[in-house]
Length: 428
Ligand code: KE4
Image 1 (cartoon, rainbow, N blue to C red):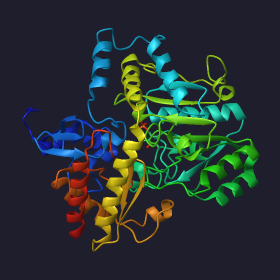
Image 2: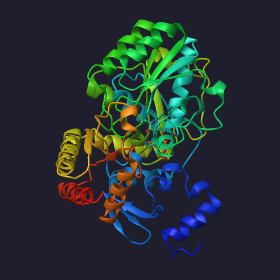
Image 3: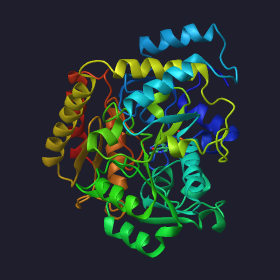
Image 4: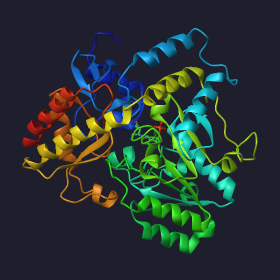
């Protein structure tokens, strides 16, 4: 492939070598009606495509780049580690240091196991909850996405919703048989299932702030209610904080809302841009894991030193003063601006936000679950996406994702985003 080829040439070559030309479906831009642009590089809040066009990035690699791209602190730590080797498959001091940072930051975590993706983290957390309780079934919420392990690919959100695949071939009836799906923000539905089958239910897994059907905050009593219901039925409460962990507070959504899960899954930010996932929680549950307990889980590159130093350097910055008040200020500036822009637009659109994660919905309805989120006009979102891209703003190519503000975004860039959105909304 000539290196001076353009995105379209690279994409047609990629499509001959990689299914759909991408290594993760949502990147194919299927729901926004154009071909994807190939990225050349990124730094801070900016990203450049191979045609040399510059954009202000609000995808942040789907969440990890909370400091902005290629932050010096992470580059320095990674450069130093590279000279010492990249993977040993043996215990290292730096994975203890990252475990220490996670345990001290996330209120409910007493012990944590590192893995290499959010999918691995949630798959392992479900297995651990089943092993700990001796029960098979678990509850998830429609529109929540927890990665692509079989039992969790049942009415999942994120890519599946975007690609319009209600559930995916290849997941066997048996694999999905123990997964119960209820509407998000619906405590009565959870109570009903637990009343009927509580003694068979190992866990409830939830995105404490939904980020895979657009950004949908929990209703006031939702998380507290889940905690109480799980307590009364001996069910493990799992917060999937792969997006929200270290995003909405240093201690994640559980710190923000003051609700303690039994297990937490993490990913994205704790890898600082490298492949890392983690699951952690109560010692009594975590010690059911091999080699201490009987529940097996393993991984060649789990705790990989390069990824560990990148994650550690990222968390060190996030532990600094005023970080989350600054992210809150920037997130609010963006969302307030977008609400103003939407308010004066000819279309029905509104912005939802928690902290530095936000999204623009194109629907008349108040969005509280997948049923209401799915009424969004995805064609209008696609037109909004294309208009923003043409004006130099890099957004998630799906109505059912989040936009992320980083510490690197300036007020000027946020205001320019709002101005471009006001312009774009006039024409969608
Ligand atoms: P990964 O396996 O992609 O690292 O994590 C899966 C996962 C688990 N839990 C939550 C709440 C998640 O949001 C994710 C993955 N997020 C999507 C975007 N919303 C990743 C982007 C993609 O699939 O390409």
